[in-house]
Image (cartoon, rainbow, N blue to C red):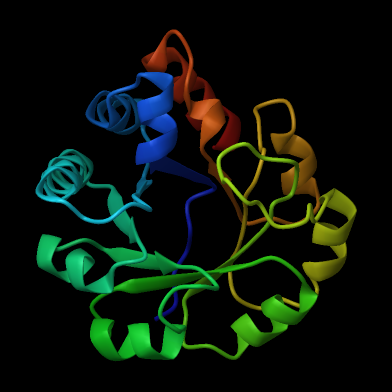
Length: 208
């Protein structure tokens, strides 16, 4: 399917938010109330009952607001929850297999980290590609090598699919990343602050 991605792609990473002492439901509410049109829930640990219930609750908040809800890794759970899409990485089920599960019911996104992976991703049955980390990031235990803004600018010409930049993107860095050609900015750590609603509103204003 052909999709238009919102320029702001907030990701609620359950591990990161737990370490920061932030309730993912509170952040989901802050984001959609601020006007976010897309939210991903990323849970890298096993799907316990608690995680499933959290994913369900976040999905309800997001979709009741009319925003798209994306789940990380698990197409089966995304379908069970009535989510809008699933995002998979290099170590997850191959995108072609994900598409067999999802059919045309889900948006499918795919993470890449270098030119070779980006070119391979262009041949996959996915709706958008992510590239990163653009900057150093603390949101992953074993991050891939930094791509950098200038490499993003060069790789923009490789991608025909919508391109999401991810990794260490802050409000201060966002204009440079857009200028280098990103269609959308995935944001994790910089969603968190003392005032979640104010931070969410700032991001929405910045990316409109």
